[in-house]
Length: 302
Image 1 (cartoon, rainbow, N blue to C red):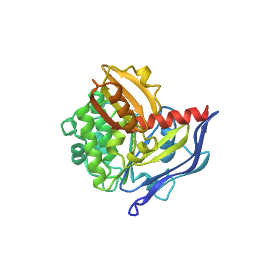
Image 2 (cartoon, one colour):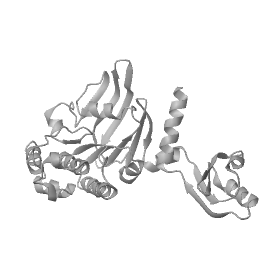
Image 3 (tube, rainbow, N blue to C red):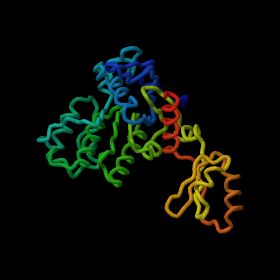
Image 4 (spheres, rainbow, N blue to C red):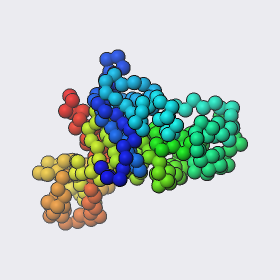
């Protein structure tokens, strides 16, 4: 943990069930100043329940949730928080300017309408009615509403869903600027490259439990693997039987091999195919690590 970071809140031993389903099973999660925390997990892993507890929208059956030393339901805690959820429930007939003006009025020192709109890239939408906007434009308005109060902590639940690549990268820049200005972010996303690009720390949830926590590099190192790609006539079925090979498959015209230690596999590939070309060796990325971690947890539970 960064010695300069301050704990802003989190969950301690949080348990939450809905009928027979245990959505969270003893989760510990710390929110810290000056960072982007990405919470990853498949659908049903417990991400939405964790956010509900942290926002005071639900209470834990056991354990504790807190924000800024208070209950998440306390008005003092809520005035320090901005929220962008997947379901917004925003009146469609109001203009964007009216929505931002109302939201800013709830906070003691907001950014203000024009600054919030500039940060979200919606300067040209202020006089448009919310209901007349495209899905991507509405998501950018929701981001502006989440940050307009100059919050110390922002919850962004799948913020770039429905955005094209340019709009997504613009939102990434806005998030980085927020953090540089002192705001902390809790991010949930299905885009693993988004977590890799933005997060200082990642928590992986699976079946209501934390199964991994660390930086993107540390998460990837948990299941260190290498991927070898090359042009080769060798059969992937044959290569898959070699010692040290996890898997081998044909990817278009290229042979792709996944292994833990690449050097002996590369030497054997070159020895058995003198015409081999286009050799590439890359380390495991966050996507492969996430899939491996959640697959291993599922197999252990089974």
